[in-house]
Image (cartoon, rainbow, N blue to C red; front, side, top):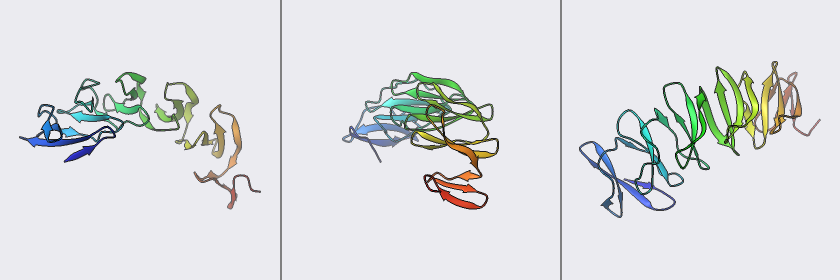
Length: 191
């Protein structure tokens, strides 16, 4: 089996229900892995039992085995879970970009993360700076640098400076820019 990587073609070999990584049919790690994720941006999550770690394409660990859930890297960051309820964000050096404190983190879009803290949603950038406080009832919909948000049972759109771009008066706003008000469908920028 081959796990493609931008840098190289890395394969997996099985022995006694354990896996090792191979390059050009040569095994270059020990047979210790019970799971191996795809190499994305040069890194893969691996498992030797109950916990996950990350390795680079040389087979060297960049983190210890400390995650209960590990996701693929995207734009230099990976969302990880450190126990059954707490998520954080690591960099491709294995350092914390955002310390684990959130009930859920949704994948970054243009460097913006949806985070859930104590049942409420908000937006952070990948350095942990707050864009929108975690006081939203629903997950914001990210549209590049604008965000569709529900406040006081009405939808509106704010930008990355949390300035209102479309007033909070609509019954619903779809991700493709359709506005719904009193059973009428409108498009953003159209009367």
